[in-house]
Image (cartoon, rainbow, N blue to C red; front, side, top):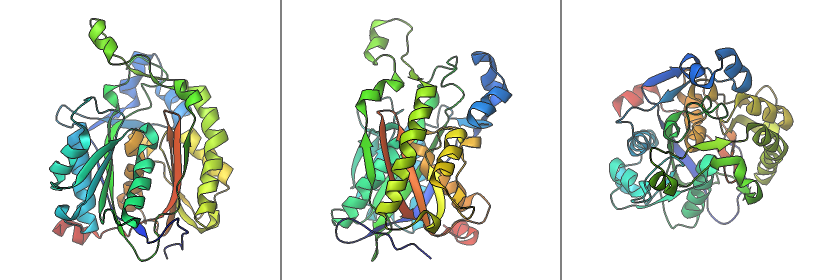
Length: 343
């Protein structure tokens, strides 16, 4: 049964459908090891990652976002023309303009929808979901498509031991619509700009103009980020559960940002999750897909072949900024394979 979640403000909103897109090319650790002078054993020990996917030339941030968005709409049973707003979270879309949002909206067929980009890096999906919830509850929009889409392989240095083995490419999406009762709990969020240097590009794109054959890439202080995540994010997650008016034991699933399996395991332990709570570990085969990681992991839990969890899920996003956000959501029921073939 869906959990009875508390909410701020009138009305309710819920997730109606979930979609995903995974690039065709699977990249095992063996392809990553030589450039960073490492080994499969070292990568798995540090991150739990066995493989990730890298997008091909035609698998752009836009095209992957469109594919995930269409699947989410199909599973939600919401026609594209009934989408009022499209929110796209990405940190790897490389065009200053035009923004990705209107292009994704056009691609899915929501040709009259308001559309905008949200730049909150790995917390982007949760931030966008919070905005979608507010739009629906305020009756500013009836249906909102939230998309996280990333080509992280474009912005990392394949020789950098701090990032090259962690990141992958993918897209995930959800459709948010009205509900009689809240299906999305209050958002607990914030930022710590004093630590913004822990994850980020070492130069602006301007440097690519001024330095021949130069491409700014993202760097990360892994140990410091790990300590910050364990120290701060577990508390944030607990606050989100309390704000939703439920207990940890009421959760059906825990779907944190898929940053690193070690972080996920520590967060689950710090929260004291009972064995009944399914913990998403999509990072093992998807890597860290930034703003796409939470909807991608959610889609895996619902459609990955196992028994899909039903009820309340705690989702937590955190990363560059440092930005962070968390909330409890009621998972939508998985569409049957028979119905999905008919869509």
